[in-house]
Length: 484
Ligand code: BG6
Figure (spheres, rainbow, N blue to C red):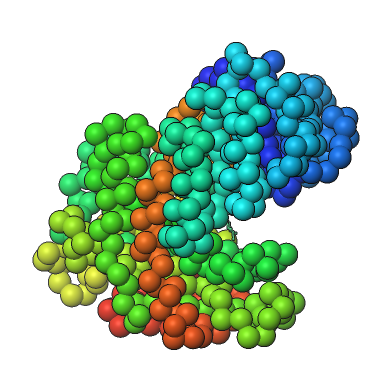
């Protein structure tokens, strides 16, 4: 396949929290891959900013180590690494004080795109925004990138939006949800709005139900302290699963342009019904053969935070009334598997009789691993013996179709950071979207808290608690298998 890498204009990107985990694991390796692909022009600067005292050289050593750990060895040629490291600078900075700000200002050039990635605790967002302005570093063209969690409820999200709005216009704020940067997630829009085939069927008349699964094998690991205050609802549903739901359910935007897309997503969130208590199952993983229980991981035997959640949602609008959306996500499950399955209704009348069986078309959109799409179609079983029907997959695995090793294939973070530099907000959340998602989430969480709701236990390596299967069984449906 021909490479379609289009270089961006030269930029100065400052990463607050430059020595942190996200920068090491995702942002810097992602930028390296874009540099290696020829997308980042010479003369750009990547400035790490954090509290630690480092020289440029010391920080470059850290970046090099991070690349060695998080970039495939066959992509780490000496020339590319050396070229990338030349762009790296470091400023030791105090987000709440005066240290480092004048040095940072010296690095930022007026005639370059300038962006600031807030890869720090949200409690520092306000200080950073204020100091960028009071030190004369930011102007109307500056872009800021903010990481999740964007608040922990509606009130805190509103406060955060208000703080940022004191210093930056909405068009300058890029709220990251890295799920929007995943290749397949964007493909969902291409599939829906680039083909005439699916859209006429994409509604309650033809779709029986939709399942969204984001299953992980990892536990909460070293993030116990953060996670125990969030749980699957705040950590995954309010943002990542909600975004997937929006893209699946939204009306066609008039253009693939930031506000058209975000207006349509917002309408979906606002059309969500409140969720009945019986339509939610929360779970917590037990200890396994070689793995600790959730309680041990967060060091709190009393914790009632969920590491798994399954729920049934209804969208009250003309397109979707009557078609349930089932969402589930959890840690320590059987496999790492994220997919969306659109389960179409039965044919209105089977001309083949009962023995032909019940067959349904299912469109599966795989986010990870093995990104791609499969459409299950019903055909005649080959050979003699009459008319027996079987389901076969029409399968497209992107890696096979597009070439896995291609420089066009980008990971979520690298795509999103390049979009910031290009000034394209389509794949970022607008303030009102985030607030609407919290407005829907808050009453659910408050209800658990008021009732002291206890999550159901589940075995690690399973598909979650039994009660989650029941959520669908009671309606004669079943979850798609999570395959190890
Ligand atoms: C993060 C969550 O936003 O997404 C993590 O905080 C989760 O808990 C992660 O593990 C999943 O991302 P991905 O890209 O690995 O599916």
